[in-house]
Length: 222
Image 1 (tube, helix red, strand yellow):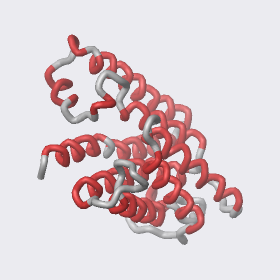
Image 2 (image 1 turned 45 degrees about the horizontal axis):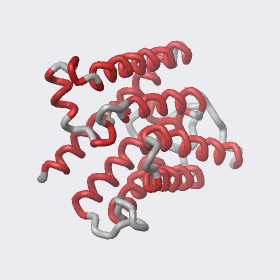
Image 3 (image 1 turned 60 degrees about the vertical axis):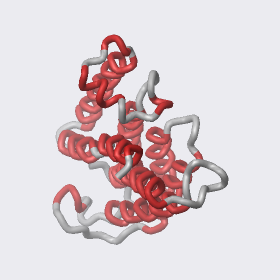
Image 4 (image 1 turned 90 degrees about the vertical axis):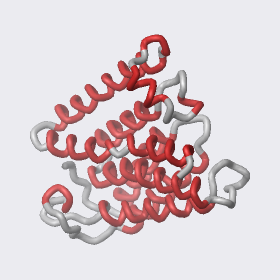
């Protein structure tokens, strides 16, 4: 495994915290949605404070210097993608149906991760002259559809399966799944100057929420 692929794995591993974010929000919001969002905001503030020490090379502890080796060149000296990811997650959880927010956040993590790893390992055909590849893009789309299939389902007695059980129940809402998956994949491909960690959850979540409304699917909180 070459160093670039190892770096990509290291970068994407950080995004696995999305699972922790969703679980933390789901558990705390059972008592108070405001408290859950406030808790995530505390994490965002801590991330921003971390950025201060990360960006200032003279104040970096050794562990931060090691982590910095995993960053893309465009992130060095600038706010990292994890901050934008946390912002996107908070906005999604605050505004969208929990199923939509969950799928949008996980598409940002696993769809992007799949596209990047497959693209770097097997990618040969560039997408319209960009640095993205068709192999990675299609792999990311499949991952996004799989995430949608798993999490965007109708409810039973106002219950979402992954909050109360281990096996999926409910019917997959395919129009919402496909719209969100295509949106997330499209944003991942075209995004260059802006950070897709912020754009993917917001745009895919917005389009998914809009489809829920158009289809008159019951919208519920956690």
